[in-house]
Image (cartoon, rainbow, N blue to C red; front, top):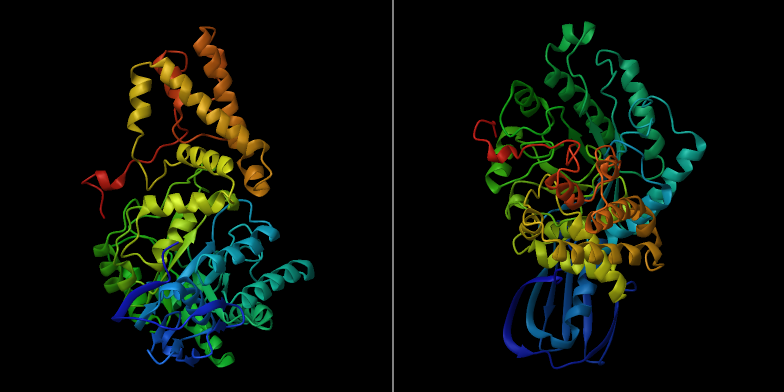
Length: 525
Protein backbone atom coordinates (compact mmCIF):
# COMPACT_ATOMS: atom_id res chain seq x y z
CA UNK A 1 0.00 0.00 0.00
CA UNK A 2 1.29 3.44 -0.93
CA UNK A 3 2.45 5.75 1.88
CA UNK A 4 -0.22 7.88 3.49
CA UNK A 5 1.66 11.11 2.82
CA UNK A 6 1.90 12.40 -0.74
CA UNK A 7 3.53 15.82 -0.34
CA UNK A 8 6.04 17.19 2.18
CA UNK A 9 6.90 20.80 2.82
CA UNK A 10 9.61 20.97 5.48
CA UNK A 11 12.28 23.45 6.62
CA UNK A 12 14.96 20.87 7.28
CA UNK A 13 14.46 20.84 11.03
CA UNK A 14 13.77 17.64 12.94
CA UNK A 15 10.78 17.59 15.29
CA UNK A 16 12.51 17.52 18.65
CA UNK A 17 9.77 15.82 20.66
CA UNK A 18 8.94 12.16 20.89
CA UNK A 19 5.66 10.46 19.99
CA UNK A 20 5.62 7.07 21.67
CA UNK A 21 2.34 5.76 20.33
CA UNK A 22 -0.54 6.73 18.06
CA UNK A 23 -3.95 5.34 19.01
CA UNK A 24 -5.78 5.53 15.71
CA UNK A 25 -9.32 4.52 16.68
CA UNK A 26 -9.37 6.86 19.66
CA UNK A 27 -7.63 9.68 17.80
CA UNK A 28 -4.97 10.09 20.46
CA UNK A 29 -1.21 10.24 20.74
CA UNK A 30 0.96 9.16 23.64
CA UNK A 31 3.90 11.55 23.60
CA UNK A 32 6.19 13.90 25.49
CA UNK A 33 4.20 16.35 27.55
CA UNK A 34 5.43 19.13 25.23
CA UNK A 35 3.51 17.70 22.28
CA UNK A 36 0.11 19.29 21.85
CA UNK A 37 -2.24 17.82 19.22
CA UNK A 38 -5.10 19.96 17.87
CA UNK A 39 -7.78 18.76 15.45
CA UNK A 40 -9.57 21.02 12.95
CA UNK A 41 -12.48 19.83 10.82
CA UNK A 42 -12.91 21.43 7.39
CA UNK A 43 -15.61 19.58 5.38
CA UNK A 44 -14.18 20.87 2.10
CA UNK A 45 -11.20 18.56 2.64
CA UNK A 46 -13.44 15.49 2.14
CA UNK A 47 -11.05 12.50 2.44
CA UNK A 48 -7.91 14.64 2.41
CA UNK A 49 -5.90 15.82 5.39
CA UNK A 50 -2.88 17.86 6.42
CA UNK A 51 -0.53 17.54 9.38
CA UNK A 52 1.19 20.79 10.37
CA UNK A 53 4.18 20.25 12.66
CA UNK A 54 5.60 23.20 14.62
CA UNK A 55 8.95 23.49 16.35
CA UNK A 56 7.04 24.46 19.50
CA UNK A 57 5.75 20.89 19.80
CA UNK A 58 2.29 21.71 18.44
CA UNK A 59 0.76 19.45 15.82
CA UNK A 60 -2.28 20.73 13.91
CA UNK A 61 -4.27 18.10 12.09
CA UNK A 62 -6.82 19.28 9.49
CA UNK A 63 -9.36 16.82 8.11
CA UNK A 64 -12.63 16.72 6.22
CA UNK A 65 -14.62 13.82 7.69
CA UNK A 66 -14.28 10.76 9.92
CA UNK A 67 -12.48 8.85 7.19
CA UNK A 68 -9.84 11.49 6.63
CA UNK A 69 -9.43 11.87 10.38
CA UNK A 70 -8.59 8.18 10.57
CA UNK A 71 -6.32 8.52 7.54
CA UNK A 72 -4.46 11.36 9.24
CA UNK A 73 -3.81 9.27 12.33
CA UNK A 74 -2.59 6.36 10.21
CA UNK A 75 -0.23 8.82 8.53
CA UNK A 76 0.94 10.23 11.85
CA UNK A 77 1.64 6.70 13.07
CA UNK A 78 3.61 5.93 9.90
CA UNK A 79 5.64 9.14 10.23
CA UNK A 80 6.06 9.40 14.01
CA UNK A 81 9.69 8.26 14.17
CA UNK A 82 11.01 10.69 11.55
CA UNK A 83 8.89 13.83 11.76
CA UNK A 84 10.26 17.14 10.54
CA UNK A 85 8.91 20.61 11.16
CA UNK A 86 6.64 21.59 8.28
CA UNK A 87 3.48 20.50 6.51
CA UNK A 88 2.44 17.03 5.35
CA UNK A 89 -0.40 16.46 2.89
CA UNK A 90 -2.27 13.23 2.22
CA UNK A 91 -5.41 11.99 0.57
CA UNK A 92 -6.74 10.13 -2.47
CA UNK A 93 -6.74 11.05 -6.14
CA UNK A 94 -10.38 9.98 -6.60
CA UNK A 95 -13.06 11.39 -4.29
CA UNK A 96 -15.23 8.24 -4.62
CA UNK A 97 -13.32 4.96 -4.50
CA UNK A 98 -14.87 1.57 -4.12
CA UNK A 99 -16.45 -1.64 -5.24
CA UNK A 100 -19.67 -2.29 -7.09
CA UNK A 101 -21.30 -5.70 -6.84
CA UNK A 102 -22.60 -5.33 -10.35
CA UNK A 103 -22.03 -8.65 -12.09
CA UNK A 104 -24.39 -11.28 -13.50
CA UNK A 105 -24.42 -14.68 -11.85
CA UNK A 106 -24.58 -15.96 -8.30
CA UNK A 107 -24.50 -12.94 -5.98
CA UNK A 108 -21.98 -12.82 -3.18
CA UNK A 109 -22.91 -14.47 0.08
CA UNK A 110 -23.83 -12.31 3.03
CA UNK A 111 -20.56 -13.15 4.77
CA UNK A 112 -18.63 -12.21 1.65
CA UNK A 113 -20.41 -8.87 1.48
CA UNK A 114 -19.52 -8.11 5.07
CA UNK A 115 -15.95 -8.99 4.21
CA UNK A 116 -16.11 -6.69 1.16
CA UNK A 117 -17.05 -3.76 3.37
CA UNK A 118 -14.20 -4.47 5.77
CA UNK A 119 -11.85 -4.83 2.81
CA UNK A 120 -12.95 -1.45 1.43
CA UNK A 121 -12.06 0.11 4.76
CA UNK A 122 -8.72 -1.70 4.98
CA UNK A 123 -7.60 -0.51 1.55
CA UNK A 124 -8.58 3.17 1.81
CA UNK A 125 -11.66 3.01 -0.37
CA UNK A 126 -14.91 4.61 0.73
CA UNK A 127 -17.90 3.25 -1.19
CA UNK A 128 -19.82 0.00 -1.66
CA UNK A 129 -22.45 -0.07 -4.42
CA UNK A 130 -25.04 -2.79 -3.87
CA UNK A 131 -26.17 -3.77 -7.37
CA UNK A 132 -26.16 -7.56 -7.90
CA UNK A 133 -27.84 -8.19 -11.25
CA UNK A 134 -29.35 -11.47 -10.05
CA UNK A 135 -30.86 -10.12 -6.85
CA UNK A 136 -34.49 -10.19 -8.06
CA UNK A 137 -35.48 -7.24 -5.85
CA UNK A 138 -32.80 -5.11 -7.47
CA UNK A 139 -33.90 -5.66 -11.06
CA UNK A 140 -36.84 -7.82 -12.06
CA UNK A 141 -38.89 -7.39 -8.87
CA UNK A 142 -37.83 -3.80 -8.27
CA UNK A 143 -41.39 -2.78 -7.36
CA UNK A 144 -41.55 -5.25 -4.47
CA UNK A 145 -40.23 -4.37 -1.03
CA UNK A 146 -37.51 -6.56 0.41
CA UNK A 147 -38.94 -9.45 2.45
CA UNK A 148 -38.08 -9.40 6.13
CA UNK A 149 -35.19 -11.88 5.92
CA UNK A 150 -33.57 -10.17 2.92
CA UNK A 151 -34.11 -6.77 4.49
CA UNK A 152 -32.47 -7.90 7.71
CA UNK A 153 -29.32 -8.89 5.84
CA UNK A 154 -29.36 -5.64 3.88
CA UNK A 155 -29.64 -3.61 7.07
CA UNK A 156 -26.71 -5.49 8.58
CA UNK A 157 -24.63 -4.46 5.56
CA UNK A 158 -25.76 -0.87 5.93
CA UNK A 159 -24.87 -0.87 9.63
CA UNK A 160 -21.45 -2.39 8.96
CA UNK A 161 -20.76 0.22 6.30
CA UNK A 162 -21.79 3.03 8.64
CA UNK A 163 -19.54 1.70 11.40
CA UNK A 164 -16.61 1.65 8.97
CA UNK A 165 -17.48 5.11 7.55
CA UNK A 166 -18.12 3.49 4.17
CA UNK A 167 -20.76 5.07 1.94
CA UNK A 168 -23.40 2.43 1.17
CA UNK A 169 -24.99 3.07 -2.24
CA UNK A 170 -28.32 1.39 -2.77
CA UNK A 171 -28.75 0.74 -6.49
CA UNK A 172 -31.99 -0.04 -8.26
CA UNK A 173 -32.53 -1.11 -11.87
CA UNK A 174 -36.15 -0.62 -13.00
CA UNK A 175 -35.49 -0.02 -16.70
CA UNK A 176 -36.69 -3.38 -17.99
CA UNK A 177 -40.35 -2.49 -17.62
CA UNK A 178 -40.66 1.00 -16.15
CA UNK A 179 -43.53 3.04 -17.61
CA UNK A 180 -42.32 6.66 -17.65
CA UNK A 181 -45.76 8.24 -18.07
CA UNK A 182 -47.40 6.73 -14.97
CA UNK A 183 -47.13 8.44 -11.61
CA UNK A 184 -47.95 5.09 -10.01
CA UNK A 185 -44.59 3.80 -11.27
CA UNK A 186 -42.77 6.64 -9.54
CA UNK A 187 -44.70 5.98 -6.36
CA UNK A 188 -43.49 2.36 -6.45
CA UNK A 189 -39.94 3.54 -7.06
CA UNK A 190 -40.05 6.03 -4.20
CA UNK A 191 -41.60 3.42 -1.91
CA UNK A 192 -38.69 1.07 -2.59
CA UNK A 193 -36.22 3.89 -1.96
CA UNK A 194 -37.99 4.78 1.28
CA UNK A 195 -37.57 1.23 2.57
CA UNK A 196 -33.77 1.53 2.64
CA UNK A 197 -33.72 5.26 3.34
CA UNK A 198 -35.44 4.55 6.64
CA UNK A 199 -32.28 2.69 7.72
CA UNK A 200 -30.00 5.64 7.13
CA UNK A 201 -28.99 5.19 3.48
CA UNK A 202 -28.11 8.50 1.83
CA UNK A 203 -26.42 7.30 -1.33
CA UNK A 204 -28.34 5.96 -4.31
CA UNK A 205 -27.88 4.89 -7.89
CA UNK A 206 -30.34 4.40 -10.74
CA UNK A 207 -29.03 1.83 -13.22
CA UNK A 208 -30.41 1.85 -16.76
CA UNK A 209 -27.73 -0.43 -18.19
CA UNK A 210 -28.25 -3.57 -20.26
CA UNK A 211 -31.88 -2.95 -21.18
CA UNK A 212 -33.91 -2.60 -24.36
CA UNK A 213 -34.28 1.16 -24.25
CA UNK A 214 -36.56 1.61 -27.25
CA UNK A 215 -39.61 3.49 -26.02
CA UNK A 216 -43.06 2.11 -26.68
CA UNK A 217 -46.68 3.24 -26.42
CA UNK A 218 -47.40 6.28 -24.24
CA UNK A 219 -43.74 6.62 -23.27
CA UNK A 220 -42.82 6.89 -26.95
CA UNK A 221 -45.58 9.40 -27.62
CA UNK A 222 -44.56 11.64 -24.71
CA UNK A 223 -40.77 11.47 -24.67
CA UNK A 224 -39.89 10.43 -28.25
CA UNK A 225 -36.33 9.40 -27.34
CA UNK A 226 -34.95 7.20 -24.55
CA UNK A 227 -32.40 9.79 -23.42
CA UNK A 228 -35.22 12.25 -22.67
CA UNK A 229 -37.11 9.59 -20.68
CA UNK A 230 -34.01 8.56 -18.75
CA UNK A 231 -33.24 12.17 -17.86
CA UNK A 232 -36.84 12.50 -16.67
CA UNK A 233 -36.82 9.48 -14.34
CA UNK A 234 -33.36 10.42 -13.04
CA UNK A 235 -34.41 13.99 -12.29
CA UNK A 236 -37.61 12.95 -10.54
CA UNK A 237 -35.70 10.54 -8.31
CA UNK A 238 -32.98 13.11 -7.69
CA UNK A 239 -35.51 15.76 -6.66
CA UNK A 240 -37.33 13.27 -4.45
CA UNK A 241 -34.09 12.51 -2.63
CA UNK A 242 -33.45 16.24 -2.25
CA UNK A 243 -36.87 16.67 -0.67
CA UNK A 244 -36.19 13.94 1.89
CA UNK A 245 -32.51 14.28 2.77
CA UNK A 246 -30.33 17.18 3.85
CA UNK A 247 -27.37 15.62 2.08
CA UNK A 248 -27.21 12.74 -0.36
CA UNK A 249 -25.39 11.43 -3.42
CA UNK A 250 -27.01 10.17 -6.61
CA UNK A 251 -25.49 8.39 -9.62
CA UNK A 252 -27.21 7.23 -12.78
CA UNK A 253 -25.92 4.62 -15.22
CA UNK A 254 -26.99 5.33 -18.80
CA UNK A 255 -27.86 2.59 -21.26
CA UNK A 256 -25.04 3.84 -23.46
CA UNK A 257 -22.48 3.50 -20.71
CA UNK A 258 -19.39 2.48 -22.65
CA UNK A 259 -18.83 4.39 -25.88
CA UNK A 260 -16.33 7.25 -26.01
CA UNK A 261 -18.11 9.14 -28.77
CA UNK A 262 -21.15 11.37 -28.71
CA UNK A 263 -24.68 10.21 -29.54
CA UNK A 264 -28.19 11.62 -29.59
CA UNK A 265 -28.91 9.70 -26.38
CA UNK A 266 -25.96 11.29 -24.64
CA UNK A 267 -26.88 14.72 -25.92
CA UNK A 268 -30.33 14.29 -24.37
CA UNK A 269 -28.75 13.31 -21.04
CA UNK A 270 -26.21 16.11 -21.23
CA UNK A 271 -28.92 18.70 -21.76
CA UNK A 272 -31.67 17.13 -19.66
CA UNK A 273 -30.07 15.73 -16.47
CA UNK A 274 -29.95 17.83 -13.33
CA UNK A 275 -26.43 19.22 -13.16
CA UNK A 276 -25.46 17.56 -9.86
CA UNK A 277 -26.31 14.00 -10.97
CA UNK A 278 -23.21 11.84 -11.40
CA UNK A 279 -22.96 9.49 -14.39
CA UNK A 280 -21.27 6.09 -14.83
CA UNK A 281 -18.98 5.29 -17.75
CA UNK A 282 -16.88 2.15 -18.37
CA UNK A 283 -14.43 3.28 -21.03
CA UNK A 284 -14.61 2.85 -24.81
CA UNK A 285 -15.90 -0.72 -24.29
CA UNK A 286 -17.72 -2.65 -21.59
CA UNK A 287 -14.33 -4.02 -20.61
CA UNK A 288 -11.75 -1.57 -21.89
CA UNK A 289 -8.24 -2.75 -22.68
CA UNK A 290 -7.05 0.83 -22.33
CA UNK A 291 -8.55 3.91 -20.71
CA UNK A 292 -6.15 6.71 -21.61
CA UNK A 293 -6.29 10.21 -20.17
CA UNK A 294 -7.56 11.51 -23.48
CA UNK A 295 -10.63 9.26 -23.37
CA UNK A 296 -11.42 10.44 -19.85
CA UNK A 297 -11.33 14.08 -20.94
CA UNK A 298 -13.45 13.33 -23.99
CA UNK A 299 -16.05 11.45 -21.93
CA UNK A 300 -16.22 14.35 -19.48
CA UNK A 301 -16.97 16.74 -22.35
CA UNK A 302 -19.56 14.40 -23.86
CA UNK A 303 -21.53 13.84 -20.65
CA UNK A 304 -20.85 17.26 -19.08
CA UNK A 305 -21.71 15.77 -15.69
CA UNK A 306 -19.52 14.45 -12.87
CA UNK A 307 -18.21 11.07 -14.06
CA UNK A 308 -17.56 7.86 -12.15
CA UNK A 309 -15.43 5.25 -13.89
CA UNK A 310 -17.14 1.86 -13.54
CA UNK A 311 -14.12 -0.30 -14.35
CA UNK A 312 -15.23 -3.78 -15.35
CA UNK A 313 -12.12 -5.41 -13.99
CA UNK A 314 -11.61 -8.08 -12.74
CA UNK A 315 -15.23 -9.13 -13.35
CA UNK A 316 -15.56 -12.56 -15.00
CA UNK A 317 -19.30 -12.99 -15.56
CA UNK A 318 -18.65 -12.95 -19.33
CA UNK A 319 -16.13 -15.79 -18.92
CA UNK A 320 -16.90 -17.66 -15.72
CA UNK A 321 -14.39 -20.39 -16.60
CA UNK A 322 -11.55 -17.89 -16.18
CA UNK A 323 -9.97 -16.07 -13.27
CA UNK A 324 -8.48 -12.62 -13.81
CA UNK A 325 -5.89 -12.13 -11.12
CA UNK A 326 -3.29 -9.80 -12.62
CA UNK A 327 -2.80 -6.17 -11.54
CA UNK A 328 -4.72 -3.27 -13.02
CA UNK A 329 -2.91 -1.99 -16.12
CA UNK A 330 -3.49 0.41 -19.01
CA UNK A 331 -5.24 3.16 -17.09
CA UNK A 332 -4.18 6.78 -17.55
CA UNK A 333 -2.50 8.50 -14.64
CA UNK A 334 -4.71 11.59 -14.89
CA UNK A 335 -8.17 10.01 -14.95
CA UNK A 336 -8.88 11.52 -11.53
CA UNK A 337 -8.92 14.89 -13.29
CA UNK A 338 -11.86 13.83 -15.47
CA UNK A 339 -13.64 11.56 -12.96
CA UNK A 340 -14.88 12.17 -9.42
CA UNK A 341 -14.82 8.47 -8.68
CA UNK A 342 -13.77 4.99 -9.72
CA UNK A 343 -15.17 1.56 -8.89
CA UNK A 344 -14.01 -2.00 -9.41
CA UNK A 345 -16.55 -4.59 -10.50
CA UNK A 346 -14.96 -7.80 -9.12
CA UNK A 347 -15.32 -11.46 -10.06
CA UNK A 348 -18.07 -13.77 -8.87
CA UNK A 349 -15.57 -15.49 -6.50
CA UNK A 350 -14.94 -12.56 -4.15
CA UNK A 351 -11.88 -13.87 -2.34
CA UNK A 352 -10.13 -14.59 -5.65
CA UNK A 353 -10.84 -10.99 -6.66
CA UNK A 354 -8.94 -9.44 -3.80
CA UNK A 355 -5.51 -9.48 -5.35
CA UNK A 356 -6.40 -7.41 -8.45
CA UNK A 357 -8.76 -5.17 -6.47
CA UNK A 358 -5.95 -4.30 -4.03
CA UNK A 359 -3.95 -3.02 -7.00
CA UNK A 360 -6.98 -1.01 -8.12
CA UNK A 361 -7.29 0.49 -4.65
CA UNK A 362 -3.65 1.56 -4.90
CA UNK A 363 -4.40 3.19 -8.25
CA UNK A 364 -7.46 4.99 -6.88
CA UNK A 365 -5.42 6.40 -4.02
CA UNK A 366 -2.43 7.54 -6.07
CA UNK A 367 -2.79 7.02 -9.82
CA UNK A 368 0.11 9.34 -10.59
CA UNK A 369 2.76 7.08 -9.04
CA UNK A 370 0.97 3.72 -9.36
CA UNK A 371 3.28 0.87 -10.35
CA UNK A 372 1.30 -2.29 -11.29
CA UNK A 373 3.96 -4.89 -10.56
CA UNK A 374 5.01 -3.31 -7.28
CA UNK A 375 1.37 -3.12 -6.18
CA UNK A 376 0.81 -6.73 -7.31
CA UNK A 377 3.73 -8.01 -5.23
CA UNK A 378 2.54 -6.12 -2.17
CA UNK A 379 -0.98 -7.50 -2.65
CA UNK A 380 0.33 -11.07 -2.78
CA UNK A 381 2.29 -10.40 0.40
CA UNK A 382 -0.80 -8.98 2.15
CA UNK A 383 -2.94 -11.98 1.22
CA UNK A 384 -0.16 -14.39 2.17
CA UNK A 385 -0.93 -13.65 5.82
CA UNK A 386 2.70 -13.89 6.96
CA UNK A 387 3.06 -17.46 5.72
CA UNK A 388 5.92 -17.62 3.20
CA UNK A 389 4.88 -20.99 1.77
CA UNK A 390 1.29 -19.87 1.18
CA UNK A 391 2.47 -16.53 -0.21
CA UNK A 392 4.76 -18.20 -2.76
CA UNK A 393 2.03 -20.63 -3.79
CA UNK A 394 -0.46 -17.80 -4.16
CA UNK A 395 1.96 -15.91 -6.41
CA UNK A 396 2.41 -18.92 -8.69
CA UNK A 397 -1.36 -19.51 -8.86
CA UNK A 398 -2.11 -15.85 -9.53
CA UNK A 399 0.60 -15.63 -12.19
CA UNK A 400 -1.03 -18.55 -13.95
CA UNK A 401 -4.27 -16.59 -14.07
CA UNK A 402 -3.02 -13.24 -15.34
CA UNK A 403 -4.44 -13.33 -18.89
CA UNK A 404 -7.52 -11.13 -19.21
CA UNK A 405 -9.17 -8.61 -21.50
CA UNK A 406 -6.84 -5.93 -20.16
CA UNK A 407 -3.77 -8.19 -20.16
CA UNK A 408 -3.33 -9.86 -23.56
CA UNK A 409 0.43 -10.26 -23.27
CA UNK A 410 1.47 -13.89 -23.80
CA UNK A 411 3.98 -15.53 -21.50
CA UNK A 412 6.87 -15.54 -23.98
CA UNK A 413 8.90 -18.00 -21.93
CA UNK A 414 6.08 -20.53 -21.73
CA UNK A 415 5.29 -20.13 -25.42
CA UNK A 416 8.94 -20.82 -26.28
CA UNK A 417 9.00 -24.00 -24.19
CA UNK A 418 5.80 -25.20 -25.87
CA UNK A 419 7.04 -24.34 -29.37
CA UNK A 420 10.33 -26.16 -28.80
CA UNK A 421 8.66 -29.10 -27.02
CA UNK A 422 11.10 -28.56 -24.16
CA UNK A 423 9.80 -31.44 -22.04
CA UNK A 424 12.44 -31.11 -19.34
CA UNK A 425 11.67 -27.46 -18.60
CA UNK A 426 7.93 -28.00 -19.04
CA UNK A 427 8.07 -30.82 -16.53
CA UNK A 428 9.67 -28.45 -14.00
CA UNK A 429 6.92 -25.93 -14.76
CA UNK A 430 4.12 -28.44 -14.23
CA UNK A 431 5.65 -29.70 -10.98
CA UNK A 432 6.09 -26.15 -9.67
CA UNK A 433 2.48 -25.18 -10.37
CA UNK A 434 1.22 -28.54 -9.09
CA UNK A 435 3.14 -28.14 -5.82
CA UNK A 436 1.75 -24.62 -5.41
CA UNK A 437 -1.80 -25.87 -5.99
CA UNK A 438 -1.32 -28.60 -3.38
CA UNK A 439 -0.17 -26.02 -0.83
CA UNK A 440 -3.20 -23.86 -1.52
CA UNK A 441 -5.49 -26.89 -1.45
CA UNK A 442 -4.31 -28.20 1.92
CA UNK A 443 -3.56 -24.92 3.68
CA UNK A 444 -5.73 -23.47 6.44
CA UNK A 445 -4.08 -20.04 6.16
CA UNK A 446 -6.90 -18.56 4.07
CA UNK A 447 -9.74 -21.12 3.89
CA UNK A 448 -12.15 -18.87 1.96
CA UNK A 449 -9.58 -18.44 -0.80
CA UNK A 450 -8.87 -22.18 -0.87
CA UNK A 451 -12.57 -23.00 -1.12
CA UNK A 452 -13.17 -20.65 -4.03
CA UNK A 453 -9.94 -21.60 -5.83
CA UNK A 454 -10.59 -25.34 -5.55
CA UNK A 455 -12.37 -25.83 -8.92
CA UNK A 456 -9.39 -24.26 -10.75
CA UNK A 457 -6.92 -26.25 -8.63
CA UNK A 458 -8.74 -29.45 -9.55
CA UNK A 459 -8.70 -28.41 -13.21
CA UNK A 460 -4.93 -28.06 -13.05
CA UNK A 461 -4.70 -31.47 -11.40
CA UNK A 462 -6.45 -32.93 -14.46
CA UNK A 463 -3.97 -31.11 -16.68
CA UNK A 464 -1.08 -32.41 -14.58
CA UNK A 465 -2.23 -36.02 -14.90
CA UNK A 466 -2.57 -35.58 -18.65
CA UNK A 467 0.93 -34.11 -18.75
CA UNK A 468 2.30 -37.17 -16.92
CA UNK A 469 0.85 -39.34 -19.68
CA UNK A 470 2.44 -37.15 -22.34
CA UNK A 471 5.80 -37.38 -20.57
CA UNK A 472 5.54 -41.17 -20.39
CA UNK A 473 4.49 -41.44 -24.04
CA UNK A 474 1.12 -42.93 -23.03
CA UNK A 475 -1.21 -40.08 -24.02
CA UNK A 476 -4.08 -40.56 -26.48
CA UNK A 477 -6.60 -38.01 -27.84
CA UNK A 478 -9.18 -39.39 -25.41
CA UNK A 479 -7.10 -38.02 -22.52
CA UNK A 480 -7.78 -34.46 -23.71
CA UNK A 481 -11.46 -34.56 -24.56
CA UNK A 482 -12.33 -32.77 -21.31
CA UNK A 483 -10.47 -29.60 -22.27
CA UNK A 484 -12.90 -27.87 -24.62
CA UNK A 485 -15.92 -27.98 -22.33
CA UNK A 486 -14.29 -27.87 -18.92
CA UNK A 487 -16.04 -25.19 -16.80
CA UNK A 488 -12.72 -24.03 -15.31
CA UNK A 489 -9.60 -22.92 -17.15
CA UNK A 490 -6.09 -21.97 -16.06
CA UNK A 491 -5.25 -18.78 -17.87
CA UNK A 492 -2.32 -19.79 -20.08
CA UNK A 493 -3.79 -23.19 -21.05
CA UNK A 494 -0.33 -24.71 -21.29
CA UNK A 495 -1.50 -28.33 -21.40
CA UNK A 496 -4.01 -27.61 -24.17
CA UNK A 497 -1.35 -25.87 -26.26
CA UNK A 498 1.12 -28.73 -25.81
CA UNK A 499 -1.51 -31.33 -26.73
CA UNK A 500 -2.44 -29.31 -29.82
CA UNK A 501 1.21 -29.00 -30.80
CA UNK A 502 1.51 -32.80 -30.54
CA UNK A 503 -1.66 -33.40 -32.57
CA UNK A 504 -3.36 -34.99 -29.54
CA UNK A 505 -6.06 -32.35 -29.19
CA UNK A 506 -8.06 -30.65 -31.94
CA UNK A 507 -10.53 -28.50 -30.03
CA UNK A 508 -10.42 -24.88 -28.94
CA UNK A 509 -7.74 -23.57 -26.63
CA UNK A 510 -10.25 -21.13 -25.16
CA UNK A 511 -14.05 -21.37 -25.39
CA UNK A 512 -14.27 -17.84 -26.75
CA UNK A 513 -11.72 -15.19 -27.53
CA UNK A 514 -12.31 -11.47 -27.91
CA UNK A 515 -9.94 -9.65 -30.24
CA UNK A 516 -8.01 -6.73 -28.83
CA UNK A 517 -10.09 -3.86 -30.20
CA UNK A 518 -7.24 -1.42 -29.68
CA UNK A 519 -5.21 -3.44 -32.16
CA UNK A 520 -7.77 -2.93 -34.94
CA UNK A 521 -7.68 0.47 -36.72
CA UNK A 522 -11.16 -0.14 -38.14
CA UNK A 523 -12.82 -0.26 -34.73
CA UNK A 524 -14.32 3.05 -33.64
CA UNK A 525 -12.77 4.21 -30.37
